Structure formats: structure tokens, C-alpha cells
Figure (cartoon, rainbow, N blue to C red):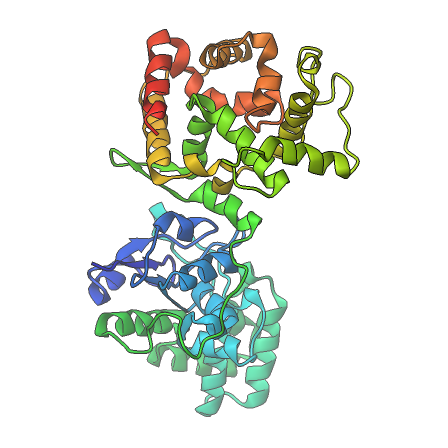
Length: 434
């Protein structure tokens, strides 16, 4: 069964959305990351009406392109939806309504045309200002009807556009107009529906309810979106995508942290993963380590002195193994650490491994005993890894973690649960099945 999701806020009240599209899942205005949380699939429909842009990062174009490439129907109208549809209609995002048309045809181009001030979700996203595009079209239509002269309409619009979007409203426009023009415009507005964004939203929802053939996935006739899945997108997906464990949502980032900390084979998997990337070979190839070392030496890399990824103890081993350890740490624990799902070794990147990670995260959440201090975090992590607290940093490097502050940040949500020795064993047991 396909799903339909609507992102809406101040443009239409929830009751109207439910009346027009009873089966839809209604969510607040869209923001960066929300589309990745949906886990939408081919055949599903995502309708974007409203979106946030000032208090948080706005929905990114790549998030929409990602859904389009998966066969998801994505359409927009009215506000953020119209803006993104006008930017992406060539790639298969469908646009509905006058606001979309004005953006698509280049008659307007400012993001502030649709921006308004509105309240919180608890306040029903109540609007406290009017959008410039609504004022623009109302003045245009009033002039076309002969209610205002073109000069009166142009002057009023110029006044409105000169104000910050927070200050725009029909009432403010009318206070700046000559008294007789304001009276005519006010009377005309009272007899006409001038809520342009609401009208466009109803058009979109009606199209979805009636099965409008124009509301279709990207396909023939649409441009193909390439290179959507960049490493930056991978980080977004890791942060915002996820799954449920016993009905509770857990991000891939949290599940990946559990895998990195508790999977007993993670260190070895990570080592093979990094060396195979350097060598350009499959991780299970018997000559991966030797090839990676040869490639690195051919490029002039040398083993650093103690203190630069290697300890005195590390330098005591065979030369090729020492060099391989250096490569794993230098290339696998980048100082600007921003993990993604694809940073996990392939054998631990499976849904089964992520499900085990989610189970551990959920257990830690439910048995949290308060935030522990730095010393306690170091102690419980050392117990999991079977090392002394003083050896944690090189152990972290071997797992792709660049430094102790990063390790402590990852481990802190689990540390309260890890205080009991039996829970450490339970966590490792869950991970060992993957």
C-alpha cells in the first residue's frame, strides 16, 4: 500500500487537509532531514506545501532529487513547495498553482515572496503576516478588475516589497495607500478570496485526492538527476535516516555508533575496509595489506615518529604491520570526522547489523542511569574493548574515531547503561549475531 505525506503549516489548517485528503499523513512544515526520515519508497507521494527556512536549515534540493530517483511522487505548491517545484520541475517534481507558475516563469524570483511570520505548532502555525506574492497577485487582480489603477497597484506593491517580510500585510499596504484607493481595495478584497497560497494548496490536495494523472513520478520527458548521492548526502542520510526498534525511532547515526563501539569484530572489519580502499582491492583479498603498504610507500609516505598516530608499543611490531596500522589510522580516522552509513565496513552496513545497533541504542535509552563523568566513560569503554583507559586513544584510532573527545561524545549516551558488567556482555552478545 502506498503512502501519502503532506508537509503543511500556516497555509492551511489541519482540518481542511484532512477533509480534502483523509488518508494522508500530515506533518509540520518540512525542514532539512525530514524527507530522509520518511523512508519513502517507489509509488509513495510526498506533498510539500510549507517549509521552514530561517530558524532551521531548509529542505535541500538533493533530498528531493533522492526521492525522485527512488520513484517517489514529489509535488509542491503555495510556499516552500512552490519554490522547490519551480527549481526542480525539470527533474520531475510536480508543481501546482499560481505561486508555482510565477516562480517557474520567472515573474518572481525572491524566496521572500512566500515568507511569512507564523506561530508554533501548538499555536496552529497561525500566520502573523501576509506573503508578498499574495499581496502582489491581489493588487494585480484588483487592477485588472478596474478597482485600482495600474499606477496605484504598482505603487502599493513597491511599498510592500520595500519592507522586511515580517512587516508585510494587507493592512499595512492599505494604510500607505490614498484613502479612497484603500477603501476600494479593502471592499474588493472582502468580496474575493485573496488567500493565494491556500487556494494553491487546495488545488494540490484535490489533485492528489482525485488521482490527477499529472501527479506522477519522474520519468520520460524529465531530466535525469545525477550525482545525488555525494559524501555530503551520505552524512545527511546517516544523521537523519533510520529505523524503528520496538516502535521507537533510532537514527542510522546512533545505530552506527553502537556498532562502532560494541561489535567485537569492528576493529578488524574497519582495518580491512581502509586498507582495501588504499590498495584498490576487495577486502577479502589475501594480499590487501601488502598492496596497500606498497601503494603508500610508492607515493612517498613514511612511518611517523611516536606521537603521530603511532605509539612506542606500535613501533615494536613488524615493519609492514606498523605501516599498515599507520595507514588505517591516518586514512580511517580523519581529523574532520563526519561519519556516514557508508563509512561502516560493508559486512556491518547491512540492515541486520543496523537493527542490532538500534536494539542496543534502545536498551541504553531505557536503562539510562544519568550522565557519567569523563573518567567513568573512559572506564566503561576500556572494559568493552579489553584495554587500559590509558590506551583508549590508539584503540579509538583503530576504529576510525579521531580523538578522545569524539570517542567520549559517541560513548556518553551508552555509558550510563554500560556501568553494569552484565549489560556490557549483553550489548556485545547482540552485536555478535551480525
